[in-house]
Length: 142
Image (cartoon, rainbow, N blue to C red; front, side, top):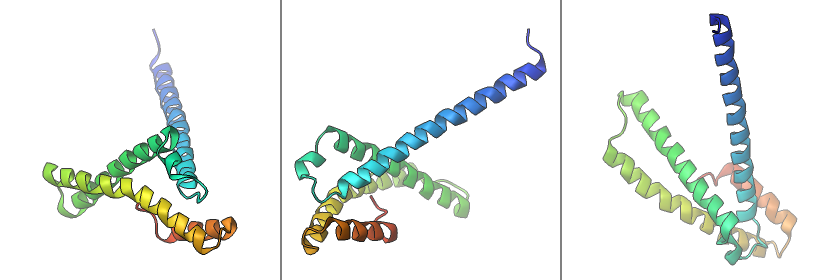
């Protein structure tokens, strides 16, 4: 029915569409993480708002996503140096170790932001500048 050339073109089109859709998904994920960063570093945000649906679900998604990335990174590094992936037990320990640290890291960062805001006597511009410099240099855990 189709020639080999048109089958190849069809497959290429599928690949291009898949990459395009993946790019859209990655952009929306990036936007969600950016909004989450801005929300959780907003000193005027109330703690109760942090626990409400849109922000809290973004925290959960971020923790799961980044935990998976870290575990994959550790496995890849271990494979590069030792030619085998980490054991299931080690992966479970990583999971049990990373999830609480990253989850509570959001709340620790939030309280830290509040303290920085108080230290700058409520100056939001200085607080934001301080936080952005701090984030770039240190706070990649969350």
